[in-house]
Each structure stands twice: as C-alpha cells, then as structure tokens.
Length: 407
Image 1 (cartoon, rainbow, N blue to C red):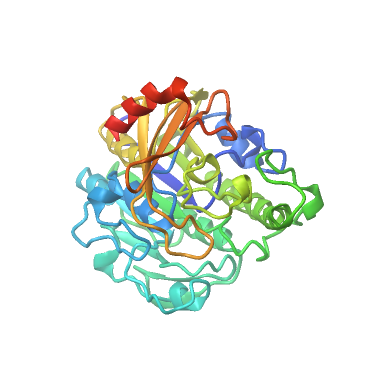
Image 2: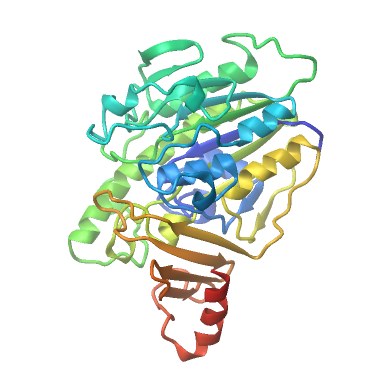
C-alpha cells in the first residue's frame, strides 16, 4: 500500500448490499459499479452497525458505535467534541472535504422530513465534523434540485439538476481543483466524502435520464409475501428505487472517471438498506439482511486486486481503513463477528418500532430484544433469505447461549 494515497468515499442512502448487478440482482442496472467491483475488493458480507441514518453516519465518521459516539437516537446530533476521520486525516496532513447530506446537526422535530425546511437548514462550521471544506445540506430528501451551503456558500443556494449529478460534479471539481484551486502543499493528499441521498425515498421522484421499469417487471426476493398489499407496494416502490440506483450509478461513474486512479483509494458504500416488503415489512431499522447489509467496494490505487471478501466488515471499520492507508499500512479485518443494533426505537412511521441488539458472523446472526431475550437466530449459509428462525431450536441452544454472553 502506497503511503498517503488520496481517499474518496462515496456514501449512498438506503442502497441494499444485494442491489447491484455484480451481486446478482436482475433489477439493478449498475454498469459503473459493476466495473468498480471487477477491480476492487468486494466485501460481500458488509453491514451497517445501526440501520438508521444518523446513527449509521456517526458510526461511519467516528469509527465508534452509537453507545460510544453520542448518537443513539434519530434526533441526536453529533457532539461538537466528537473526533472523526476528518480530524484523524487532517492531523496526518490531508486536505479534507465533505459534499452532500449530513444528517448529524440539530434538527427541527416539527418540520416536515421531506422538503426545503431541512434541506435549507444551516449547519454551522462547528457542527461539520472537522472537515476543512464542507458543502452540503442537513437532510430534506430532495433528490432533484438540491439546496447547498457551506465553505464557499454562506447561505443556501438552489442548484438545478439531479442531486447525485450535482454533488458528484462539484466534488470532482474540488478533487481536480478545477473550480477553486486549493493551493495544496507539495505532495499533500486529499480525503473527500461524497454523501448522496438516493436511492432513498421518495421513490416516485424523477431519476435523471432513466425510464423506470413497470412494477410488473420487478423481480421480487422470495421472502416478499405474494398476492396482497405488501407485494403491490413493494413492486411500485422498487420500480422507482431501481430507477434511482441506475441514475446514481451514472453519477458515480462520471465522478470516478475524473478521479486520479493511480493515486486514489476509492470506497463505495451505503449507510443502510431497505426492506422493500421482505418479511412483510418496509424501510429500515430492522435487523434483517435487507436492512443491515450494505455494499462495500474498495479499490486501492491502481486497482488490480479484485476479489470477493466474506469477512463481516462493519461501517465502523471504514474510518480505520482510511487511517491505516494514510499511514502507509494495509488494513485487514481481525475479527470474525460484528455487532449491530438499534439502541433506541426509530420513532418514525413504518420503521421497526423497537430497540434490539445483535451479532453477525459470515454464516450466522443472533438478535436480542431490548430486555435481552433472544428474538432471531439464522443460519445464513443454509438460509440466506432468513425464512427459518432457529431461536427455539434445541440443536442451536448452546451456540445461542455462547453468543448471548458476547452480547
């Protein structure tokens, strides 16, 4: 691993780990990500530590779980004293930049979640996680025509176009110094995060240059109940979901085409997934694979190390990867399990209504309810769709008891 490579994180929202062409999803048209995966380490068992936006983002940026970083609930903000990967890389001589959705500042609980109120909310410099350059928005889910503010935009400015296109273009300009030269010191590397909302709902929002498939064309996972309202809702949502996946894949591809390949480490991931009717439920905050498994593609400078990696890597590991690269070290997952949880109930319509905690290995998963009683235990190798809950199986009692001790 070369010392001090440039580092680019591309972080999406609600993109399931299985929702790529290279992962075998027949609905997903992702030529750019498929090409990236063919030249990258593909962590096929990567998970989010917390399948809800603010908790997952805080864990990603701090390298610490919610219980340690101060963001336990949906309305919690990242403490101003929190140390993030931006602080760590800045201390190591990196120019740091952040573009896009933040979702970690104090928010107005009375304002509509979707719309301009959150999209135009100012995030003050002391709330920007230590990034030297910051240009983004708090939230709002405006997948088209976003409002941006930050280092060079004192007040929110309205940008026309698909959100992923706008953010990837502006990030590319910063990376290549086309818009505003950064006057880097000799050999000063950069760290850039591009945080995108799609394919988060509203799924009916227009997706740039993409004609959505019809609901009848959607291939559903086998754990989606058929013949009723769940199937109908899943088909309509997924038609829009995959349109935004295709549009975002194109925006990501345009960004990657402008990044210096031989000197840049690229990470593509998502903060969480979406159930889309699997097990009869929707959205996130659930402990099932559709909610907790995320894509994680890592291309090191120059590429050429393509492989699939089955280690259970968590988003909390990604910042530690970056620090290792900044110090010229390779990073390897040194454990065989990863913890994940909803430390507090989501408290939002349609999400999982309770808190829980779990542990996942490459082949097994245990989930406990808030009171510590076992809720779910799956053999993921034999039952990847999680259709047979083994929590009451005498044959698995010893393994469950051992895992409960670890939790």
